[in-house]
Image (cartoon, rainbow, N blue to C red; front, side, top):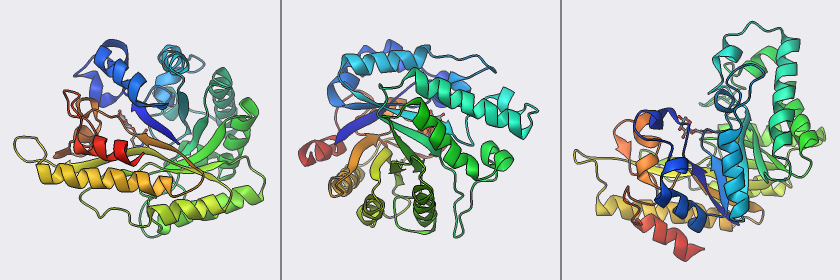
Length: 320
Ligand code: XIL
């Protein structure tokens, strides 16, 4: 089982406050090398970041992560190729025909996956393609699906597979930890893609957990049913956020509950044979996306801002 983290950088929530931690924070880099066997780019491979202008790629930040991973014997998870969010303006505001869009996506996938072929073990090919609620549908705001139809999902997997036949190709989403309408939609889609012979190799749940909801009690069962389809599974973006009081600090009781939740998530993955990657979405509260995106909450990661370890860190360490 690989234990991974997102590599901070490029996030809208960081730009104002910090220089890129992966480049400038030596304590951060040391922890990254010491604590983890897998790295995920938090933003550095998203379209708006790696493909900021049409036909112009910004590979340097991702090259640096891949090089770091190779030097430290770590795996890398690619994130992501077909998503509705964090796309560059040239793409979303451009005036393209369906044929042009198809060519743009194919070229992007072949270029990016091809560049890192053999160096990226798992790819989140399609990210967050279903809507929430009781009757999930493919997201209308996904430009690829809305312009090209649902068949583009299979094509994206095929193109990625051509560009790197050794990489394991995943579906990835949030709010699919439990068995429920949204994960059911993925289950049905997975069966369909597999029946069509599409190179789909894995199902991943992000696991952005919150004390505002119960712990996803069917997490292991859910992963197991995808495992039973012959897919690998992964937890790709685990964090556990909580409401914070005026002093902005979690209580001891919250920290202990958080430790339980991290441990339960790890145990769920350990209980499923081909759950091969367990990734937390950052490890240090200092660089977390959570307070910016979920106002009034925070403290979602396993280390405090000063790099001291929380109960959640030790809960993972003793469970492994
Ligand atoms: C988040 C990053 O953490 C932020 O830095 C960025 O500003 C927005 O995206 N699901 C995903 C991730 O698939 O890519 C998101 O990452 C979190 C939710």
